[in-house]
Amino acid sequence: MTSTPDLTISGSATIGGATLFAPLSLTLGAGQWTCLLGGSGVGKTTVLRLIAGLDTGAEFTGQITASDGQPVTQRVAYMAQDDLLLPWATVAQNVLLGPRLRGETPDLARRDRLIERMRLQDHLTKKPGELSGGQRQRVALARTLMEDRPIVLLDEPFSALDARTRADMQDLAAEALQGRTVLLVTHDPAEAARLGQSIVVMTQHGLTPCQPPAASAPRKVDDLGSLETQGALLRLLREEAA
Amino acid sequence: MKYLSALAATLFALAVWQMIVFLTGLPKFILPGPALVAETWWQNRWLIAEHTWITAIEVVVGLACGTVLGVVTALQLANSRAARVLVQPMLVFTQALPVFALAPLLTLWLGYGLWSKVAMAVLIIYFPITSSFFDGLMRTPAGYLDLARTMQASPRAVLWHIRIPAALPSLASGMRLAAVYAPIGAVIGEWVGSSQGLGYLMLLANGRAKTDLMFAAMLTLGVFSVLLHMLVRRATARMAGEAR
Image (cartoon, rainbow over all chains, first blue to last red; front, side):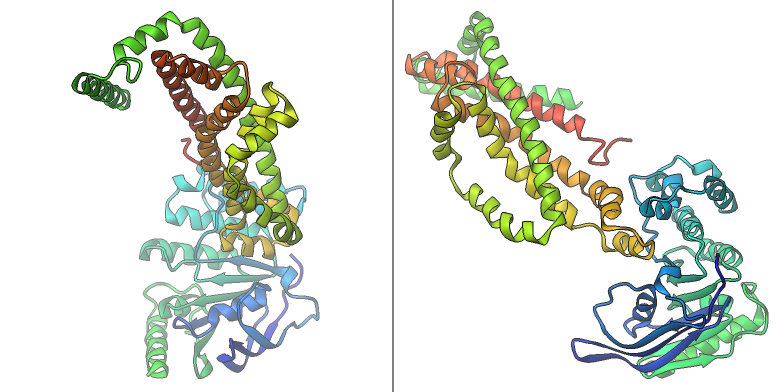
């Protein structure tokens, strides 16, 4: 992994002439988890996809820059709500997708370390269809880590999981992605309150930075400060929507 | 259970057939009963086997050539916008032409032998193979392509590692369809001009009012087509993602 930069996206976006989001500026602190919290349709996924260099269907005016001046899109790893595992490939093959697509010689020792870290060693030769939802997201996380990129973009990766598995995955991801510049897009105030080192609420009126809880992330599920923040975030979401 | 229900359906069909023969009292050169057809089939088993062999070769070679041609065409279409603009309308147009009308031409160009029938089978299966595989190639789930993009994959690598594997189930359904159509193509070719094959035998038997032999040949063709379909089904099970 190369050095982790600050990342700033500033600008506005329209879809077919209608405003998706007015001019805004969001900075992702180097080596930090930034949680972008918002309801459906406010454009938070668009922000993430713009940083990733993916098609958004929106017209974006503005710029996306890294503090070290290097290009951004070649340095991101991406993880979505859908695990995007190839159903015909084994767990081991799925983890190595990036190197295979780039025609690189894969670092098998590194793959094995990641597989072990994600507690997947018993599932190496299984196909995704044979795994549970939580196991599948662990494979997706291993694949993301295999990319070893300084910037990691997470688009609601845990929202389809049950509460217990989600909390496990949050802990695992927080630990595994430590030191990277992470953007987590989520609609879940509890998730933002648990993981965010910086929390930003996105509504149709723009961005509102919020004070993260005092404890260091990932916070305990029953951490009082986090629960308080969670309540405050939900209140903010509801007020802004009204 | 599956075989049992197939057997029951066959017995039922035979019973209905026999019933129609019995109720209508049609002479056997119009509608022979199942028993007579079975007897004729047994008496002519070597003759029928010989002609089945010829038709089988035509069908299998046609299926192989048509599949290769269809796969190559679909890949070209998926890869190049120019190919889509130039070739796709033509592909649809060839389907709008009645293949029956082309059969005499093929015989004129390729002769009475194997290749005019192979060409006929190819013509008939080319479109289902091409269009099903092409559809599969163009319908790669967008999420996979997004992921590949963030991984800086070349279009070639995406095609090879993602789009083709994701399209294999579509190709499998095209091939299964083709297995049913290919015998029809071969038989049409034989009707128009040939001296061997089940289509030729059917025409010959019909012309001599040997309706029982005609039925025997026709049913043999039917059984052959069903077996071929089952074989292709099994062969493509892995592609279709059905294998466990």
